[in-house]
Image (cartoon, rainbow, N blue to C red; front, top):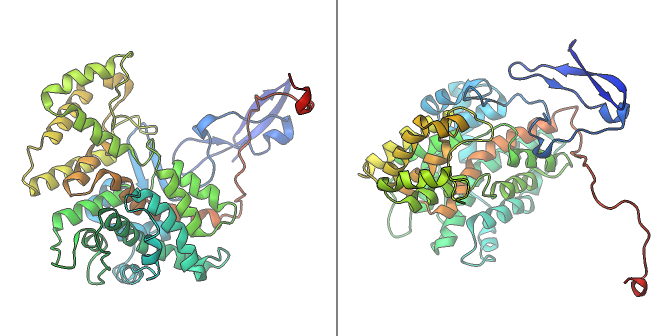
Length: 429
């Protein structure tokens, strides 16, 4: 850390250390800026600010690279499974066969939720949005499992982590079943993670549900692709909540609430609605023209990314998965897919899209896939939350174990009134 940067504020020049990571851009450490100059930095959205050190996920938006603990997302999605990715996220290394078997066993046997949660669910209106149910039920886990809320106890932190990874799909399936008026389905220990989830969503007491392996594999890939994504809005929310010492269930509930925002977890739902609005391939050119018109409020959803300035690496995997699911359903010529393919073709060739780097992202394809698998649009973000839970947990645990961790406290540029004196109500004009 021999490199340094200088900054001059009101004629006073100070030196700030420059830190380097293993890969990625250097960062200027401004931790002592205020103490030495009396000035803060101004960075709306923290787009140029590194809020922490992390060993979990790396993104190179210019090159279209996403690494989990150093492993390319393409390799993990094509060669591994979701629980292997969960192990990698939590422990930093891929598991041995014995470690994988033990981890799978422990997660599987934590999938049931406390039976009193059934009564908790009945307090919601029957038409409650599944994400509203998820925010409440995840937060409520701390009331049912208060034996794993002591964040100073390493053992309790691990138990809470395992519980959330295991119970999130159960809660998600319960939220879905409740929204459609069907009875809850208990998990089965002889099924893998995603097969278990599909069964809990679609089985009914009157007949056994047959797991479609194509669907199970597709959903497993979707979970891997969404497992973590560096310091995004919901992950930052989890870290900020955790910095206060809040219990892990409350922190993850905060992440779920943030994910609910349409600019974050709801993007795939918005992309699907756009494809449905376009309707048929012959209308694509018309809508592309509308997107280029600055005076037209229409915007193409599922293109571009705040971080990726190249093709989203997750989108390539998701495109292939979408084809596999639709082919299995006999919908290889699905109108929505045809619209999507034509839009993608235009986006990769049209100068307007190339200049603005509006490449198709993962949301562009995942909405079509989930719809084809039978999930309603209001469940899309719920599935995102199931996948992202392991990333949130890994980031939270990393923060708790970081000796330099402080309670989050961003500063501000105040632009309100200066000091003024109180005027009695009868003297106000």
